[in-house]
Image (cartoon, rainbow, N blue to C red; front, side):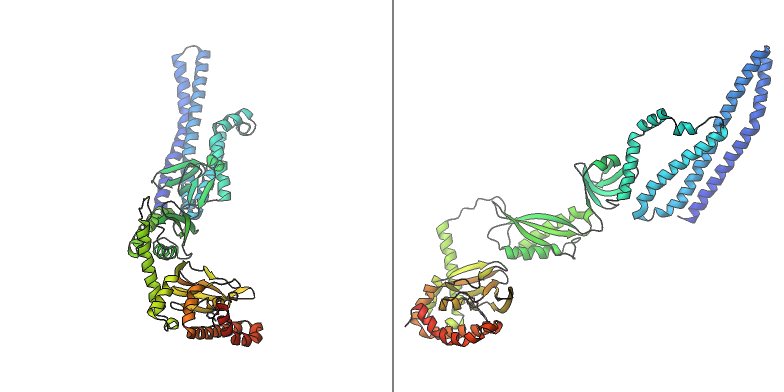
Length: 496
Ligand code: CMP
């Protein structure tokens, strides 16, 4: 606190003390003369000696009591002023320290009440030494009950408040939700109750004793609290793309923690589209409403830019045949384009490539989804149309990537051509579109292009060699397999 303020307060206190002491001196000085005067006055008024003595005694007694009470009040005023001054002197500094503020406030209140009681006790006893106050406080069951009943709620709050302070389940600035009572930012915790400011900027004051019986959900101020925001997309929009777009949009929102990556995940496959949830960690939980809103807004803009659509209750009328024929043609064209740009299929005529494209299928795979699995039988080969894939083999029961194949490269030919189980697991690296070519489609092509069998068997041998480098135990058998590849392909396909 300011020294100027302290000085001013001290001067006030000094003035008050002077006034009080002066009044006290004055009261003790005037008390006896007034009593004397009254005694004389009654004697002159009343001739009857006994009666006048009785009256003057009564009046003197009354006056004495009046002066005593006046002195008690004066002393008490002085005590209150002194305690308040000391209080602001000691606790004024503590107030600045927000974390300990509420604890000191509570302790301060308890100490002040105790000091008042003690001061009253001493002052009262000094004026009425014959009145035994102590038994009144300690021995009187009735007083105890009366006080107890009168202060039931207050004491309940006080002790619940003390328990709350000892436990410290939340602090100022934390956002708490109290059962059904409400939610808001804690503004103060006193011996009486907790004051929270709701998000409608109203104050909610809840007694400590009630608080003790409620379930309280606390979002601590210095903790990274998580929030979830929901949205949905059409079934036609790619989940992998949605995840990437939304995550990027969310990361850039103010008040979203950069320490933990936001999670964007499918919550449900709903009636109108894919239901999503965003889980993010918020820096200042008290502002979560604004942050949630900003996230929704940013998602909207991101969707506009990336051509992703929100789902809403719609009834879309598909003219099934036309639509599917149209998209099928588009797909075949895309496959044709891709296959004709692969050197391996270069020897094929346009007609053959078209036939192959017709028989092939375009499949979509999610990131980390397996396309073929090691050890399983294989009936088709694949060409990466969009995206990329990892070729993994098991080493000590753990997957190890031995190669990455990108657009235009193919895999799955080994098992297809030789009839052996899949030699590796191939996993999509990202959302990938893969062209699948079945055994019979390939057989037709190989029938007419014997040279392709040779190219293919060379590739198979090459890949086998790479595989065996990774699996030493296969080394001895590799050579034999190399020689066999060409023959076994022809045999498997029934080629002459
Ligand atoms: P297949 O054995 O049918 O299934 C797994 C596929 O992974 C395999 O065919 C090959 O196409 C592919 N593959 C295996 N080894 C390698 C490698 N070293 N480099 C690239 N692709 C490979």
